Image 1 (cartoon, helix red, strand yellow):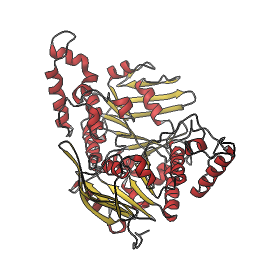
Image 2: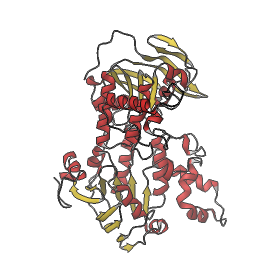
Image 3: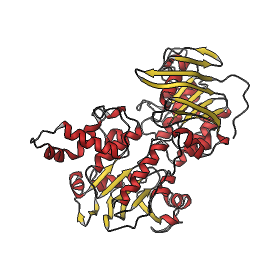
Image 4: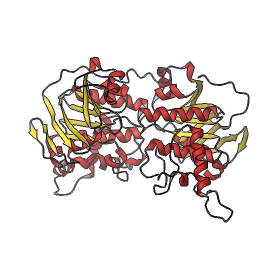
Length: 513
């Protein structure tokens, strides 16, 4: 669908907006117009200014210069309440519902319909909630507790809440990052329904294919500067990447051809009751093996068991021929396994610690030996090692002493990689290595993984990004409901064959169709 003809003023707009935080220029001369009946993408690398745009629209930030306009009229949002009153709603990647309240109670929190006696009219509240879900074309029970809802269902509840407040502008900030393919399809159906009902939608995603599927126009930012607004139909993915990064990205999947060596990781009939069953595979030196499947298939749980975070009930794990005991990360690390977890903020980093201290967490013993002062660690030694890894991974930072939380998502991922690569592992397990990072950094991470494999490292990569799986893996192992359903060589791997196995539509392991 191409962008509609526009005669009315935009529902919401930023006009030549600039915003600084101290010496940091977050936005410079940014103009973006959101029109009724249109899904508008906001594209840019991490640090491009997308979050500042969202917070300015939402009333969290006020522009230093330029204007916010509603229906063509300049307005000043003194806070989020003003933006909500103007019909602006933001749907974040991870909704924040009250888990012990029902879906209907979450939607009408603080605005519950009342009976003539002043009591909450639950029947009316449930009926209105049902009407909202019907309007959105989804089937959810208004009386269901919010606890236990999937991220996708929580987002639908947040959208229903916004519609109940008569929101005219819906800002969707990385809404698909944690969703399965089917959940993304449902979210897009809801988004199209809202668009067709006259809402203006701002859509932010690092997944270029989603922008080309759901959006009519795209505004691109680079380093806080407005690059331009164009019809999506007039662009190719390569065009959009060039506008985002300011250069040609030669190869998003720079996979080097490597002849696999000896078996580094051997998993034999690994079982954890109720989670995964009879999982067996090998990863050789120089090889990137992808573990694919839908969310909930058991991929991350297998990785956690291999690393010893979770105990397994049956089976065996060997690294370079040495058997590992169940439930011992210490033994796994000593044997040469490194795990880069899916949730880098909660499990991969200590967000309040410095960049250099995070990089040194896995090498405390080595740092003490290099310092030569008993239990003490020299900050100079720690910083020198961190600086070396920062250079090798092309980390973008101000000072190594800064807390790691100030880095962009892609640079945080590089810190996690540096922390584990510093242990000189034989096997690197990376869980969703490029989730939530921009296309330029994604290409850098892929280049790094390819170079590590070429240097004889065995890599087990877990990814929900099918193009990433197909572009980077020498072999694809597919899981469905806790079991391996296929092992597909690189030459035979297609989106169709992987999805068939991921949904249980194949036979024994080894079938590629």
